[in-house]
Image (cartoon, rainbow, N blue to C red):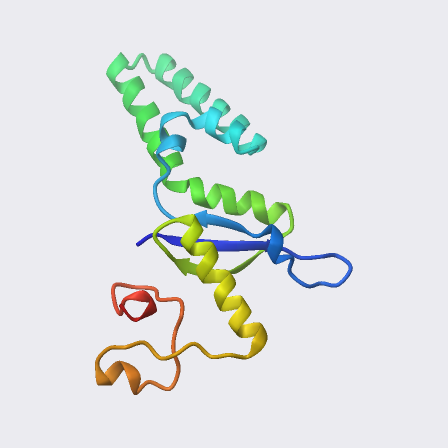
Length: 162
C-alpha cells in the first residue's frame, strides 16, 4: 500500500495550517519522471529542477564525448540518471513545497490519493473534535497496547489494523 506525505501551507497571519490547500505526495517510483525527466519537471512547475536536469544531461553527454565513450555507455549514463530522477521525484516535489512555505502534516497509507485525502481529513476531524478512533480488531496483544499508532513505518504491523 503506497504511503502519501501530506503538506499544508501555514497561514502568515494566524500561523495555523490551511488544510484546504493540502498537497498529497505519493512515495515511490514516478514513471513519468523517469520517462520524460525535464518535461515532467516543467509540467510540475519545478523550474529549477528542470534546468538542473537539462544541465546534468548535457554534462553527462559532454563527459561521454570527451572520454570517447561508445553509444551504449552514453545511453547507460542517461538511463541511470533518469532512474535516479524517477526514484527521487517525491523528494524533489517535497523540496519545492517546502520552498513555497508548506510544512509536513503527516503520513497516510492509502491505495490512492482520494483514499489518502479521506483518511487524513477524517483523522484531522477526529482530532479536532477530540474523538478517539476505535481500537483496531486483531489479536489480544495488539489491543493491550496503551496507544494506537496511525502511521506505521516498517514491515509490520499493518496500517489501520489490517
